[in-house]
Image (cartoon, rainbow, N blue to C red; front, side):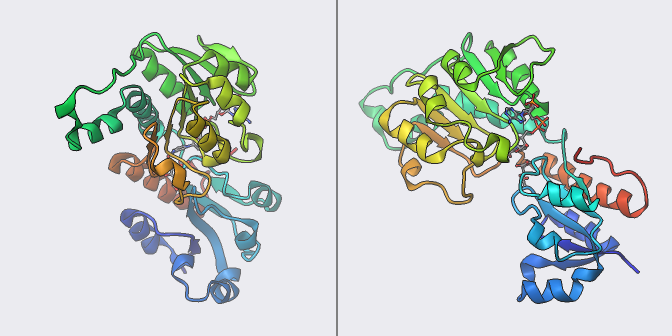
Length: 311
Ligand code: NAP
Ligand code: 8YV
């Protein structure tokens, strides 16, 4: 008898194929009546396959008395109720490290795209405005100061990459680390001191709205905010207001509070570059993330230690 698992949302084809081969998969997102599906199959379901957006709440996990493992396609597990899982001894796994390179590349791309006004200049050419003269000059990044909010696995990769571009790196987190970068124990103080603030910390209650109006004001009219972490990390209303009134110079955003909805006001601003949560969005990285989802479930059901448990 194959173990039965619940799939919260569509996954990559190779992941769905591998999971269908090894398990009886109940697709919650395809159920005409999710409640009826959970009532019928819930007692037999031993695993969940999910992603960072759909996560797994206590509402669903609470319907699965035989649940043993949650395998998340994504490193951020803020949408999984970890307290509920821990309280029941449910193993949670994620996909760390394999995505560092591409998520860091997205942060670097947003730093370059904002500093060199890439998107606005693209429109400038397409709209024929170049025929009337040159656009305003952009800004260099060599020698400019970058503050990283969350110097973890991805944050360190961003620091290393931007170091090669000649940026001066600082960071803020809850603890000082043994790294050759300036540490700020206060986020507002760091924002005041840097040209770019890059958020790459986890989402969740401890970071909810920490990039607030005060932090954005400290970053200032010449400053740029880049968010490749979670939309919950910034106060979106304060961010829109700061960009509108010039308190903040520019923003490069891969994540938003209510994805896939983006505040209307941001759509018409030319001092903002928007991405549809694609930090890890390359074929290569997404395949590696999918492979980890499969491998963690395989190991669990083979009675082996999972590869990448959430601590
Ligand atoms: P990580 O290695 O765990 O690093 C997280 C860092 O954040 C640590 O340096 C930690 O330092 C800091 N941090 C944690 N809580 C904090 C708080 N309350 N205030 C300030 N700093 C805090 O995680 P990672 O693998 O680099 O991933 C980071 C996050 O990136 C994920 O959780 C996810 O939300 C996001 N992400 C986004 C994308 C995307 O597509 N845009 C892709 C992958 C990941 P201290 O413990 O010292 O505070
Ligand atoms: C994923 C992410 O795209 O890893 C994360 O935390 O945000 C992204 O890599 C996301 O989890 C998939 O929904």
